[in-house]
Image (cartoon, rainbow, N blue to C red; front, side):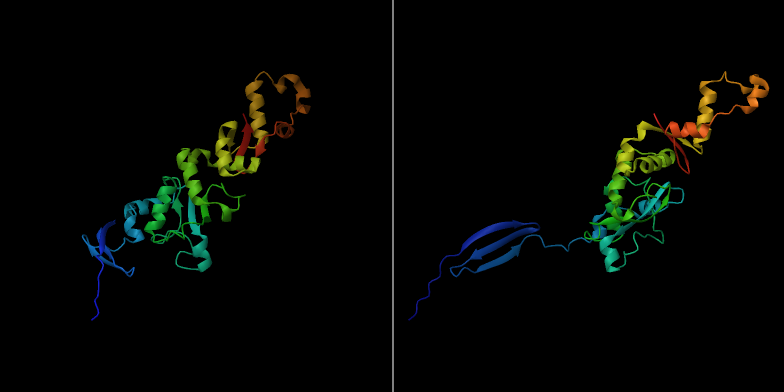
Length: 246
């Protein structure tokens, strides 16, 4: 007669995320587990996790009067030519208004609401943009829009007044947007002005007593080379105006 001996099972409880699991380990090293308590729910989808509303999406994708609207791209989506390969898109609109965007946290909420996976959100770039020429001389393939969103939001940048100035600083200093924001107080920008016009106005304001008409006929031959003055004063001229160091 064979006698079968059973060792007493040791029982322990391990708490899971959704209840308790009772596990019994026997002498052979096998483990029998029984789930008790709350039933596991299906994990939430990416769209269900975001707090983004359709109303807010409509607001952010209305970039008609924006000074900086960006179509956010994903290198993963672009290389795979999947449904997000052409960048952000909501109801036919591709451009997000970065003046309204409240930092990178809200940007990621937008992408999640649009169904972008976490992997697609890891390597972002500026696929296209509209507005002032902030990135005209920049390689947008290597600019992360999430970083731009944080720079604008955290520094309270007013692009309606500072966009042309920042673009001029970036061009003159050969720097990126972050450096330009840090140097914005070092310069004054005069919109729709040339270097010559700036110097001529400067002379009129600083030396109002100068009147070539008082010189008679000799005054017809006396001129001031405002263009040379602008070069000597290192006045940087752009298509939108002139940049003057304080």
